[in-house]
Length: 353
Ligand SMILES: NC(=O)c1ccc[n+]([C@@H]2O[C@H](COP(=O)([O-])OP(=O)(O)OC[C@H]3O[C@@H](n4cnc5c(N)ncnc54)[C@H](OP(=O)(O)O)[C@@H]3O)[C@@H](O)[C@H]2O)c1
Image 1: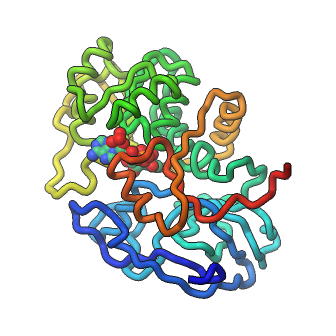
Image 2: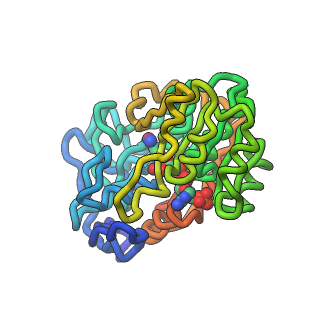
């Protein structure tokens, strides 16, 4: 395919319920690079960030916060890119842009406000690397920030448990908990290497390997006074084990449920939910884009902590648009550490030096 063409991944077929997503569900196509019309601009993709929710867009019956993607359509996906031609007065050639770019080299875009779930943003002061806009300053960082501080209402000294702790959201959440003066911060992850990384690099107090340890016993042992905030990315058995060990007035932040989402049904609810009553606990789901109108607030804090060296931006980069289906699949196999990024083109030379 010519570099002047727009290479794309289109949806070829929906995976069966228990099937792991992979390249076989997509078709690699190309078409001429489109031209913007009045009010639009053309964006060249720099990086895309696969997220587990994208698996949910490929299922007709799936209940999601977004509609499913039709067979034959370009796969939806958030990314950072550069505007290379514009017919919009407020968006100039060279500007850096974040939005739903899709799994492709080029996309036609226009500004979208907070009313749209995949809100867009012109990056006022880009920092290097530009992938940061998708990781610590992007969806992963903002999800951790609003999940922990708004939904979880974290207070200094409280004890926090985080599942999928070495993933994109989890790696940010643990660090934010630490910065905000949490008491004990415990992570759950799927390998000893990840657990060591959580403690040695990210400041978690302890990490539990859910594949080799008895999670229920370890949680009981590590939280003698109960969990004040459980930030859950996983659901299933880990959620059950956490519910059995809540502190009085605990908050369960329901961020995701990657362990149960695509297993064959029927799906059962958490078995220890009666503990919500005994502990007068609160369990609340959220979608990060609900907080889009407050994004500047998160960005200011996250950027400040990042510049001060308090917050590590953990990224795990694959190289090449052609690898995008494998990048998405890697999330379900636990192959990523930190935010999974797929690089589509190099960062443009906008930083000088
Ligand atoms: N509510 C929102 O607005 C929002 C926004 C973004 C993301 N999310 C959700 O947050 C969660 C994390 O998203 P992310 O983008 O940061 O992905 P991620 O954590 O970077 O990747 C997923 C991780 O989940 C773990 N995992 C996979 N299958 C598992 C299983 N069966 N049991 C336990 N752990 C499993 C894997 O790590 P291990 O090696 O530890 O298994 C994997 O690395 C997802 O559930 C996602 O849907 C929600």
